[in-house]
Image (cartoon, rainbow, N blue to C red; front, side, top):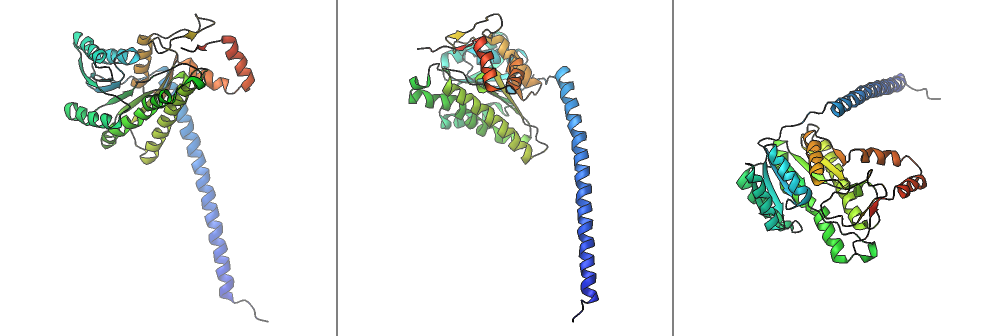
Length: 323
């Protein structure tokens, strides 16, 4: 009978020792990673609490802010309020007359603003205008994708053209504008994108099915883009803020419905704009208007679906058909 050689036995013992050493190393590494995770986790919680109660607002004086949909409503109020803070405004809107009026209003108070007519459903037009703006005004520090439309009626009453146009303005325009201005931000590793979603991007609302779809899409694209850049560059300093306004009194919401008007009512455009600018200047990633809506939604999703429906039926708020 052939006996195992001493060299084979020695190799086997050596391999077992190496395996044991690797196992110990992996366990120690895992324990250290968990300890570091716990430490960073609580540091992050502490920083978030401090920022909540002691927010630090970034100064936008001297920065260049581009806003879409500045001819009326929230867009116009954003332009006026950013200008009051000392920013230079680049105003985009499809309506040349109303957009020029916004610029005149800003200049009347000594602000600096420039009007450009743009149909954000046209990617080629966006790209051409973006290049023109960058040549004339340099780096764009803040881009606010605000333009949007909101037809209000049941899904079967929406036409194909209406739905396609809604997605082109409310969603696709965000992609084209981001692609136009993000490269310069990547080079400088700075900049801020603000996107207007809606409370209809947090929960579904009858008579707003396509609109809700567009606003959920905005939330998804902003979250995914933020994560993509974070993974690509851990030192990424480009910021993203997504806003979820409740119904704002801009004329888009033609037939709002409230059972308790003192509790749930239309938000003034001036108040909405002020909240948006505050969220941007304090680098909040997600902010609803009023701020409590996001927290209420998170709480509501912990409840059984039917229980939450009972509460929303009791409050009886929403949008009636505009037809």
